Amino acid sequence: MGNLQNVLVTGTSSGFGRLIAATLASRGHTVVATMRDPAGRNAEVARELGRLSDSLHVLELDVTSDASVHDAVATAETITGGLDVVVNNAGIGAGGHAEAFTPAQLAGILDINVVGVQRVTRATLPFLRQRGRGLLLSVSSIMGRIVIPWSAPYTASKFALEGLMESYRIELTGTGVEVAIVEPGGFATDFASRMLGPDDTERVASYGERAGEPQRLWGGFMEALAKDGPDPQLVADAVAETVDAPAGQRAFRVVVDPMMGGGAATAVNETTEAVQAQLMKQLGGGSDQAEA
Ligand SMILES: NC(=O)c1ccc[n+]([C@@H]2O[C@H](COP(=O)([O-])OP(=O)(O)OC[C@H]3O[C@@H](n4cnc5c(N)ncnc54)[C@H](OP(=O)(O)O)[C@@H]3O)[C@@H](O)[C@H]2O)c1
Image (tube, rainbow, N blue to C red; front, top):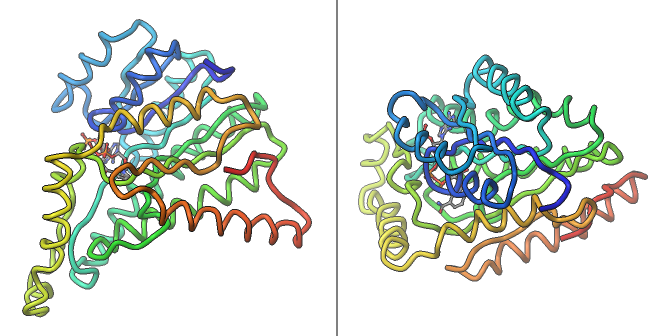
């Protein structure tokens, strides 16, 4: 374990979040595993997580609610004696024609995947900055770097998340707080079964023969994932290794994409890293984090 002990994780009721919380606890961290409705529909998983370790605490946190985020962070600060790491993991997917998602649907997805991260970051960052150390880690996606069609609201949200985190990385230079992004490819978590479809079904039908294209692409992909998908634990391990890496030596972006080889996102990352560094030199600034 590195020098960052106390970790808050969002969206731990299933998938990566649950594994991230368990993995960090098994490595000796004090973990605040947050989720929606731990006393109701998520009670069983909350109990299971709580039983894993005395230093794993389950708290309610809905990333779309300012009050919920505020209350959970205040309690987490008290329980842990001070948070060191925030893992923004909660998120939701979307599959279908871009045009058929209503503005309200797009806003709802952005509220979870992007604004939710900003809520949690704004609630926790003052504590981290005050202590002069810490890590903000977000679970993005390879779809935050490259476009796979028929998932526009999700892709837009993860591209936005990448921009948000890259801005924090630069702006937090010199504060001791680092930023990292883990970019998974496809994994068979509960993600596929919770993906939102478009509300405007008439708009879908107006595509005629092409109305079924999202299902053709995503249906095939999900089938392959369910049959032979990589182990989601790989993502939890990548998060834990990033948390436990020494300060100043953390990769900024980590691609975990065994299914498609990770080549496309890695190529984009390498290009933008170089372009961004050059731009920051021109602007007379930069980041004090290691390059990936
Ligand atoms: N699986 C993949 O192939 C894949 C690939 C790339 C990136 N990702 C990213 O990985 C992250 C985790 O996804 P997953 O694959 O583990 O999917 P998952 O099993 O569906 O988990 C998503 C988690 O987010 C939580 N969540 C949703 N809305 C929330 C809210 N308003 N407040 C708090 N928690 C909320 C869900 O909790 P509830 O029980 O309350 O719904 C659930 O625990 C997401 O950010 C996703 O975009 C996944």
